Length: 476
Ligand code: COA
Image 1 (cartoon, rainbow, N blue to C red):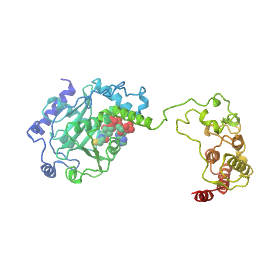
Image 2: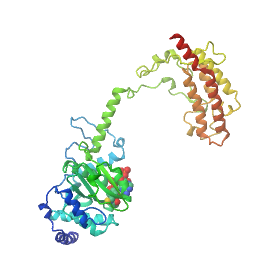
Image 3: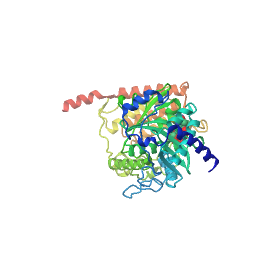
Image 4: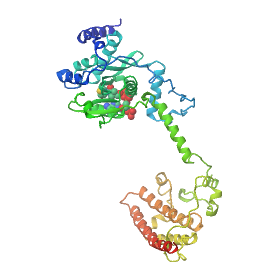
């Protein structure tokens, strides 16, 4: 026997004599909760955690759930349809890590087992190693207390074996009548932390206690350092379980936070990657039924290979006439776009004909607004495109540049702005670009805000909603 094992055996013999291993077999499988509570009160729980209860011993295979659904690369759901995206990176950090660990389990490198002090020599050796991991990783826990709970036959431990060595484990105590398990300790050995084993261990534990022990809740008193970890494992500080189910059974101690994880039999916690993929696929299918967003049409050729205009602004030589948009732009009709009808306001700005917001009248209004804005004393920073040699990083920051001359050109062509909203949106972009690049104390920033107020005021003054309401009433 190697030296390490001999030492472990020595410890084991000692512990066996202390705990009289195997007595658990004589205990009822589902002990009376009240008796547990009384025993608890009689002092064994110490000041940290509860330490009574009953349990069964069994082992869980390394496959997690054991349904052999192929969570590794190239896996498939039951009907044989491949559901894995080719690229793992599409799945996100969490799922990618789970896939990797699942593969180690499939290869037999990682094995998860649930054991307890039942007199089995191998179990005792593993429990000694686990106890040592807990002692090292939980230095604030009294060592005797750890020993007492780990080797208490009423406590179960799920261990993670990597190449037959215990690298992590969680010790919990089942409360059968309440269908809950109280996690006493959980730790991963120092050189194996932050590799996902802690998460995988908890997922195996959830699957195991849910499927094999019919539990609905895991509960724990987490110290400040552990709250973050448990939160990531789906534990919440809001305990939804009925208070009488846990108060008095779970030992509360200073500085701890009670946390609960509700378990669902419908969730296979060790098969998250497959579940997430299947869910994503289902959502994508549903979206496809409701929308045509997945249909991608080729871009408009008139923009292809066209050199950038002044200041990096991309402007076509000609605009598509509104009347031809439906037939010229692929996908518009399919997306359900329809030519907007006449807006529900009237134009009350001088020079806008009879005020009906027809395309011609709207363009008169827009031309007039551009002239007014251009003539404003704060308009000077916005008239022309920013010269990149004068402001070298401008186009690194501003990805959709705009300037008044270009807006004027777009109005003049008569086909670009189909609605007043489109026209106003360009002005909004013009001002927002300025405020994005310049800080609030600059003259440019202040000009943008003043000119925007002026523009908004002119738009508001040039339209009237009242007239159309009146008109409607008359017609109605
Ligand atoms: N606080 C906040 N988050 C933590 C954390 C902590 N103390 N420990 C781990 N995490 C995070 C990880 O960053 C990781 O986040 P991610 O999923 O966004 O990447 C996630 O929890 C789990 O990481 P994982 O690699 O699976 O954890 P692990 O293998 O390192 O195991 C512990 C986590 C807590 C079990 C392990 O660090 C440990 O043994 N710590 C000392 C003992 C301890 O505190 N036990 C818990 C109370 S009994």
